[in-house]
Image (cartoon, rainbow, N blue to C red; front, side):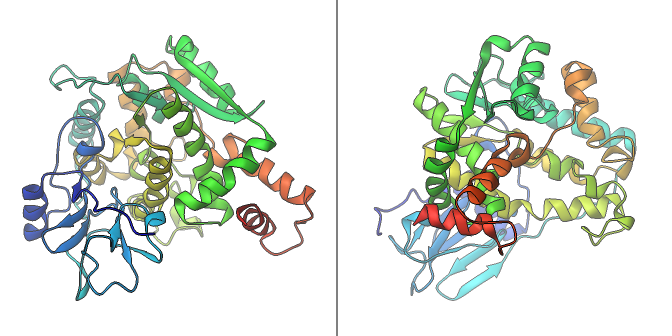
Length: 388
């Protein structure tokens, strides 16, 4: 399906992007809140398609386009094209093909005190909770709130915004969100969206179409986010603030704690394992941004601002993850600088597909409809049936 010409570039001023590409600067840096201040960029610049190093602004072109930069041959969402191919992160696409122009830096670990100070400065600035950051209007922003430290930090930057949590009755995320909202005196701001099986059946085709994927992992991760975004949009909000990137940047996964003994990562150091998780961000953000776009809202992602990414890359291993704690530096900022209660700053969090019970209930529906677990990819087969 051919669309009208797209806005040419998202996320940054054209001169900033030109300078970044010419100088090989993967994190040119911006300030403030919102999608235009994430540090990412993507779109058409001059005679080329461009995308930032972490893929924060997905861009696609038709697979068979003679000129991928021509009007109608490229788009910000895959559903706007017949045979979309994503521009690689840090890449430039022209009629001659793709070229990698940006690579993510690998700075050495900073001294612990200096690294902690830099992360504190970056996070408080990105969240807008320091005295020096110029505040921007936020009356069009809602917050996706699961009750963990990531979403609670994001909520601290938007003290007047509504908070939304989604899940099945009795799920971890709804219980955690209620407890956390009460602990930070925001219980009145919380809206709980309880899912049913009918909601899942209705949402799966929309999610699959929005993200251009039907595998169970991506669909069950994207579905809760899409449902929250749709509700926020229906309530009149144009932007949704998210905690995306916190686990990847700050050592939130169990596999990075003792990487030498964990088959899920190749590195044998905490910093190396965290680096591997950071490198998964482009694919995740492609999914999440497309899901939000389908709901008609734009992402606000404080943890993905360039200044935060740069500071996180310099953290030593002991400020990332230890056998006793994960996201060490992030939790310190939450406790010591933002002032979140320990019950929130130290809370454990389940992955969204499990914390909302979406994965569990989609598996239940698949089996009820004849797709048994002994079958290969039984949930994926059920998803594709729903889409058809």
